[in-house]
Image (cartoon, rainbow, N blue to C red; front, side, top):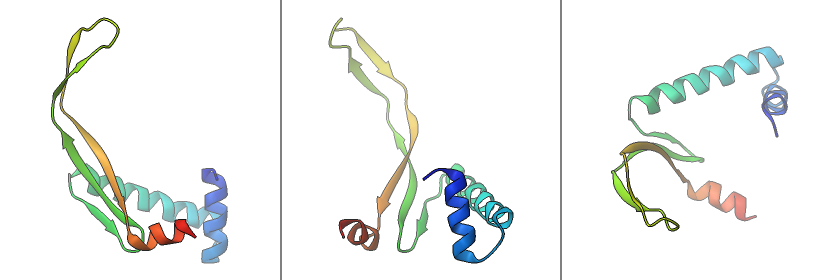
Length: 91
């Protein structure tokens, strides 16, 4: 499902025009990124928990050349699905 199909399905389910559904989705995505950009976690009940985790720097080895490299620290998005979502997917 691509973005256009998702907006059409959302508009049909909410019984609103597609333009309004697109605005709702854009607002949700903007708020979502703002919250995660601040380093906070975001829990959507029945769906799961999103949080930003800091990965520490580490040393990796290129298997071909045996050269060691330092990978700098970075931030990574983590998602833990809720039990309800896990059960729904299993069905």
